Image (cartoon, rainbow, N blue to C red; front, top):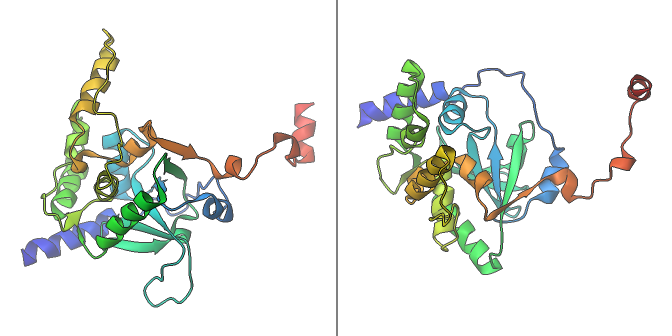
Length: 258
């Protein structure tokens, strides 16, 4: 296992490297993002690392990572400053707390659970914080590397399974499964377990079976929180009060319109 752990560590370092370092596609100011977040919110992240590319391909989604917002009263490592804090499962360091500022220059989306009491929000956060220190699932790393090496043309209905091949060890996790477990601990739904309508549409049938298969936490991926009918999408610019008539357009833009 020591040799396997060493190999996995090297692979994790390789997978976490950015493909391009000049991409900054944040669509929200950092201060607006911070002010819009509430405890229990999930922050979806569009990464640009090798592992991000693999996850986005396999899930057919913009989102490659998910983190849970736990507030701004925790201290990070040796820092005495209080900052907005996220809990996430990192491929190199395992489950950890990080400042929100880590993702200030990337494209993000806030997904907010609807209807949960403060007591249950606290329970979700406490569950996630209790996982801090757990390691990232080595088997999941090996599975992703296998995909990156061969890049097989995977049928859509099998792609999710390729991200759910973890070891099953409760002390090992990946980002979306850790968060899914936290919400399942208070019996909060993520995707519907049943679809009541019927349809002859082939696309509908694929969606139907896709949702029915998602029961175990290891099958959840970042995109599921975006697609969930139980999470509200919060856009910070609109959240703080957007007025299109107060936009400051440049003189050049006005002349082009004319």
